[in-house]
Length: 144
Image (cartoon, rainbow, N blue to C red; front, side, top):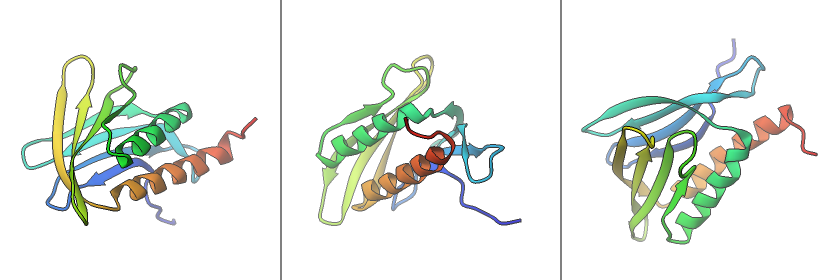
């Protein structure tokens, strides 16, 4: 059986440790991720996994967050939505790396912030993950 890299919508990994990942579950259709998945948060203090889902209509909002953060503005994905929101704040930017704070808020019981030092290309990496997921779902859900 051929191994494949799991589909992820976001995979932000700090250069000094820590990460925030939204990874999609496999579906019954080969090569197509399911809309359900897990939100993983890890740093030296806490490790957590939370079930989540991402609908195809959520992808435009994530693209907007990446555009906002690239422009130096704070942004929140799925703010006040049905599932955990993910906020990103650019704390500072240097020549080859950024420090960001990623905040996860489930609107009911938990709010968690993780500061990460990331290489400058981290936004492009997130855009590549987004496009891979869009392309996979486009094979299943044709555009009108």
